[in-house]
Image (cartoon, rainbow, N blue to C red; front, top):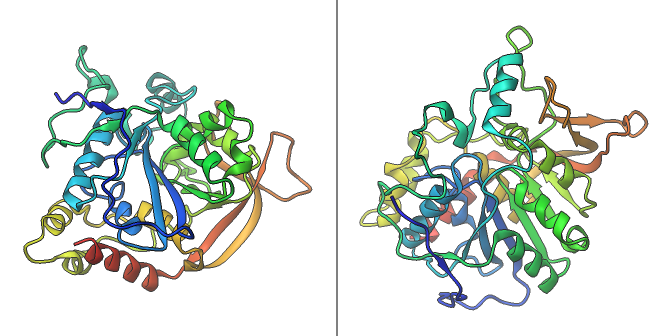
Length: 351
């Protein structure tokens, strides 16, 4: 098992100086790997003089925190950007647990994707989620930062008030904790871009959750509701367009570069026939014009432990039931060809 070490130092190995006007981002993600939609979006932030990735913050979700952080550190090494700092955040949701999710499934039917909690009941008694296993792609030599993800977020938005966009591609636990820790946090953030969207994810006959687009809010509903009602100046949700572009043979061919360790990593670990979920979130955060149709609505996340627990609900202004709702801009249509080109260009630019 690989123990994820922490570093107190601030890495300063940048390959180029960022101009003062560069758009600033924090990539907050339920990191997993190897390859796939959790780490690939990082490429969109690299080698772009108009974009500054301040850091990557990890949260439990699709995978256990320590394992996901290890995958990300190794990916940065392979991509040739070990200077980008990675911060570990929440290792569990605010309220939800594997046991609560199992109870929900007993009441309403199986959830198709439970992330780190998949097959939780089969874990050995000595399983330690704080330890990362040895990775197939090799263990990282760079280490996670000593500062927590929440502290890092708070520090950065105070350092750059009104300039930082948080790309939230995982459960919203880190952001909710930052809201609770610092009363000014939400007012200092430029925008939050999240993945979920307001739609029904249930099969009405079986009760099964058919779509995993809602996973991030289902995994930590209370955190999502805190974020929606915190008073952020801008919240963009992309869940309705995240499945627009799929990983297919043509895309893998376009990512293939000779004599490239990064290309080999991406193509060998491609998640075939699955969407570029989180790549869409990152691309829209960097270039909002990729969204060609959208709507502004009032939205909330249901935190009652019932059938719609964790689902994003939408309301007209005159019918919001008083449970607390925030204004969100919902992406309805993506410029798919331009997004695909943007992603492929980011892959080749990182070679």
